[in-house]
Image 1 (cartoon, rainbow, N blue to C red):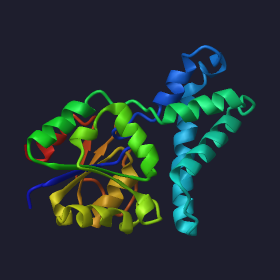
Image 2: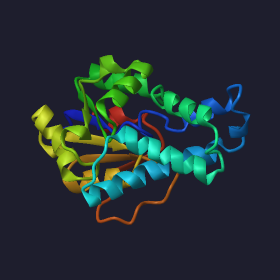
Image 3: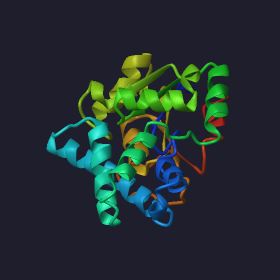
Length: 228
């Protein structure tokens, strides 16, 4: 069936999750972060994801903001930077203002002008997602922002992907689902979505039962994949 709906993961897909650490490293007072920010950002993101998986398996759901803080605390501890509460708070504040990748606004605009339904489907809590959408200025090219908080479990649980056909009254194979997380794209493929993995870092394919239909280096070609 033709694609009618384009749905995007948020963090790492539309929004640059490394931006908070990168920006803080250039600000006065946080010089200790200057050489460590890539490591901090990498640890932060990895632990944030790992904690969502563990919580989903253990049936111990928590707001994504709590998970995000836990991941940062681990990252700061691992890089011997846990003793600066000002740095911790600044990194958390910046996470609410993450930059969108440069191609995002034009890509979403092209989808909307082409008649596509558009949405975010994210582990993020509604306040976090609303902050990021407003900061990036992309609210007018999104039909909805869907959060796992409405079902109480993190991706890749099928109940999360159910939110899309329920909201847009469409079949799974009418949905182009886009994620920068290989495991998320794989899980969405198993669910029945047409999937695109945005592999900006050139990572190898995850060894999972499903694989994404498309592998991209950025989001520029999404309108073409959607049939526009």
